[in-house]
Image 1 (spheres, rainbow, N blue to C red):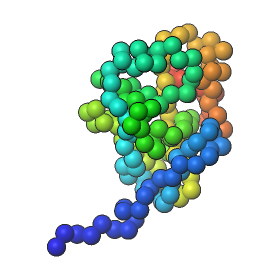
Image 2: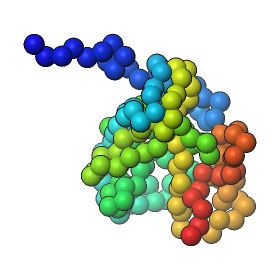
Image 3: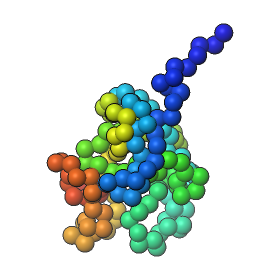
Image 4: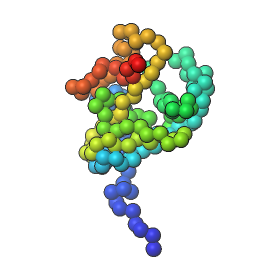
Amino acid sequence: MPAKKSSKTSRRAVAVRGSAIHGRGVFAARDIAKGERIIEYKGTLITEAAADERYGDDESNHTFLFLLDNDMVIDANRGGNSARWINHSCRPNCEPMEEGNRLYIDAIRNIKAGEELSYEYNLVIEDRYTPAIKRLYACRCGTSQCQGTFLAARR
């Protein structure tokens, strides 16, 4: 007889609702343990060139695109799930983990039920980081460690 899943792991881990950080957010629907795989970031897998062609002229800083290390992009505008609503924070409780062409969101600390999930976006853009660009990509996490933007530090 196969082992029965515990009720803790079979209960839905997340819920989407309004966020104080930005628009919608993803919240823990139950306690989540450090190291737990919470959700897969789903969407249509396309090349970076296809993403540029599809969204290149979009002036919005709001995107559901996740660039993988192999220059493939998960486009959560198409076939995406709740993970696309996870907001940025300069003091995150989650981190994205790549496995091939798949992306998962894992807890980097214990998360209490009702707490908003977040990870550092570390967005890289080609434009110079002017004050206007930083305002366009302003962070609203409100933590004491807030860097003011969700752009990645230049190297």
